[in-house]
Figure (cartoon, rainbow, N blue to C red):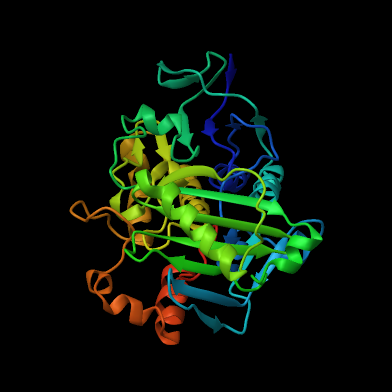
Length: 374
């Protein structure tokens, strides 16, 4: 049986960032993921300059041979009414393809990797976690997304939350004919809020690729809302009339409504496995990256891997993202006053859609990048 200091389950942005941040710790790290990389990942796919800074990624170098769509504008509206377009001037975000981005991050992580390998068993033996009766380590990190087996280990598996947000999306490379017919612009992602404000849809062009999707907190009507949105976008010419392939689904927890424990003896959760997606937008890449960096610092400083020694990780998460409330209603974190009829008026306001929806809820521009050393 192979021995490691740390086993990370999940090779997405959270897991690969943690592994890279631990490279100077002298610890032997293993990443396990059920899929081979590069792999498709259901996600709208954009990252802010803050994420690029925290990851120490040079956009110019990353863009060589990969999709990196600069974003300077946003087009925001409520379904059934006209959209408002705001020009932010500078680059406020980048469009990426997760199959490329995640593979890039994983390739940078200099640790041992077991890809295309499902976690079939997790057992405890003499203070170590034993995975698949093959690998063992005193510290097990869950970074495998919403359905992470390590989260289930802590007694908190899928189906135990009423506030799971479900989303469906499709991403494909447009033909020249489709590209000419598509009125959506690469530097201007479109966000369309459902009229009941329980979710939103998006149209996001990244060079020759187009990503279309919709996420809501009431999964049972997701397909109906998606079908109506896609038809509306086709009729208005925002997207091509002939979309290929099926829409793929995924799920995640919004931070303010998740109750997943973050640590236990020899266990720590990061990223979507911990339920860290921003409550206002559902965006999870930045919280995943930042949670991994915070976890790395706690792991390096911890005298052991007891829950007590790891507890400062939970404290750092609360300091960075706020304290989770236990009495909030399910769904995206939209203020009650916005759920009134005034919402349709506000969604026509350049000031509100720019300062509140885009810059505060989606881009978190008031929050500086998290450095590796915190």
